[in-house]
Image (cartoon, rainbow, N blue to C red; front, side, top):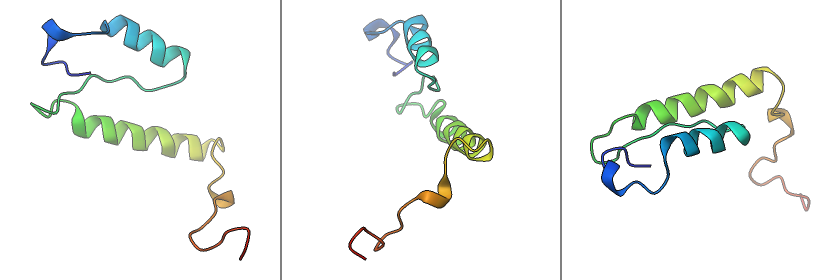
Length: 72
């Protein structure tokens, strides 16, 4: 969602936050035009992925590596 275009907003912030909360997602409003929160969105996403790996929610040892398909 572009927070620099408030007058053209299609989804209210509260709706976006509620959707994210309901689906276990991260919610951040960003602006490509002003770069507001763009870097923070990537950093927060990486931190959340790392946190879930540490909690054992993602099994990084069970990932298929390039070139290691079922036919290998």
